[in-house]
Structures are given as structure tokens and as C-alpha cells.
Length: 164
Image (cartoon, rainbow, N blue to C red; front, side, top):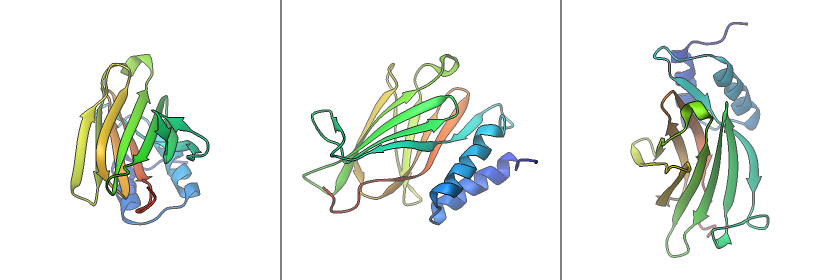
């Protein structure tokens, strides 16, 4: 079986942003990304797969109940995310930690985008932790930029409006 080339896979990611995709399709696309080999410039792109979701009844993080606690896998990398709704406004604080292998240790750039044109970015600290406060309620695309690879969560659903 031949795998699609890099251009086709990037088109698939763009397609994911424009229409709903079920979990089975996301898993299939994740498998394609994990096994496709390096991109032309030597950069690997991983489509992260959701491993675990915790609800407020199951997890207490950073002194309060987490609206969503998520764990993702992307090849050799793991990403832990907490989406915490703000009580004072319709917004979400995103806390995360990126776990990488030794080859990609160090700081990584993190970009969260929504609505096609809006985005914010930050950098992980030496422990892989990052924080993006005050994101609008909705769905996001999260991208982690590492020296030799890029990790993508194509459709990160935040807490629903009014869930706080």
C-alpha cells in the first residue's frame, strides 16, 4: 500500500478544519501521519491522537477542577493539556506540557489558532510546560514546533460556551 505524499496529507489536515470528522477517521489519519516518513525538508509532522480524557469529577489540577484534561500521543511525543474555563468571562485558559524524546529535548514553539485567522503563540519552558490564558471559547488547532518535527492537534475542542 502506498501512502499519500506530504502535500496530500497537509491538504487532509486543512480539510479537517473545515468539516467535522469522526474519531475513526482521525485515528486513520493519525496512523498515516505516524508512518509516512520525513517531510521533504527533513521535518516530521505528527497528527496527535487523543489517548485519555478526564472530566471535572475525575481530576483536580492546579488547585481547581479541570473542565477538560487531555492526553495526546504523537509518534514518540506525549502532550498533556488542561482546558480550564474562566469564571469571570467566556474564555479558557490552556495549560500544557510537552514530553519529547532526547533528540528533540529543549524548548518548543506552541501556536494555537481558531477561526481561520486568529492565533496566539508561546514557547515551552525547560520542562516542556506552557500556558496560554484567555482563549475564546470554541475549537482550536494546536501546533507544537520542535527542531526536527511538528505536532498537530487539528481539532482541539474547548469547553462549550456557558460550561463554566
